Length: 427
Image (cartoon, rainbow, N blue to C red; front, side, top):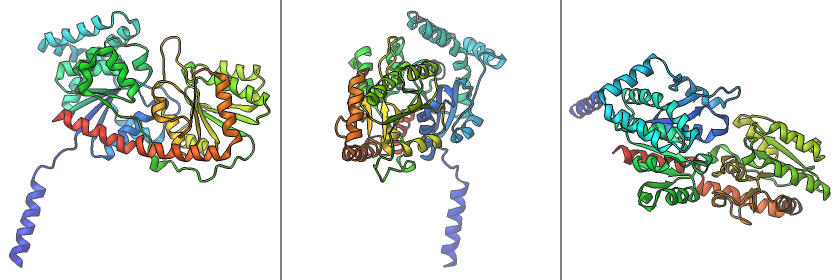
């Protein structure tokens, strides 16, 4: 018995002395962090670390935000922020040019050549290039095994440069306007990536049509998701007072808020007692406030500005219907699948959204919500009135919306799929 105990102690001591496996270390590149309107990036990082990964953050630029999610504070404190140019960045570029002239000049040449038709992408790429060279050195020093960029624009270009100079495998997620608005350099980014994540089948088809079917093998559709365990579905669908419509998102043309104001004016002309709460801020706020006043619905529209996740959840609990009236813009902007819409559905809210881009992959018309043609005020007002007049329909759609998100848009399940891709890329 004593001998057995001694053997057990020796085995325990050997296990403690053996080097313990380090958690997989992934570098995340994004344009700005923390960005209030990109909560999905924050939640994805948190979920990935909950699954045993260590995430190093490399924002290209620091977000100057007065309101941030409390959960982001710890990540902000350990993020690798860099200025536009300083002595360490300059030295890193000189080292790379001296030690790897072909790789350095080749990456820079590709960046310039493939973006010549886009002044925005060319300027942004050239601004990010010196940073990317320096970040690559930092990533190697930190033991990073994989680089992941959020958005197919400048972050993916930075990951491309880092891969060329360090050999680290990279991937990127293509969301909405970053993919639809400008596709310069897209094929080069896709070709050298270990894999590419499209947040919808719609986006996947856009990439395939632009870059060719030979890229089919490493394109993955992994939806953004929401933490359904943190969003309590509603128990009651009774309406108390006016029908409270909720629209969450940046106040920008692509979100279509002006069409919702016009629909509200039409509903009130029809005698429907309805109000709209806009959550979010943006460049169109003054124009939207003026539109509401001119349409005679100013007293029934409230602009709440930028809100934290906790405040957004409170709005979801008070609302009767969530509306996402997205539209494509003249300069090519287009929604992906709005995470705010997922959150509303997870809260059990009936939703009205545009039949646009990847939204029909989230909302099935008549089953988990109502879809209307983008920019069609009459159809939008009719869908909202239908929900106003039919409480049973509100409840049926709300419960089906929650079930849809639990099944296909759950954060932890979808991050597990992404984590598996990281592990395979590093292997």
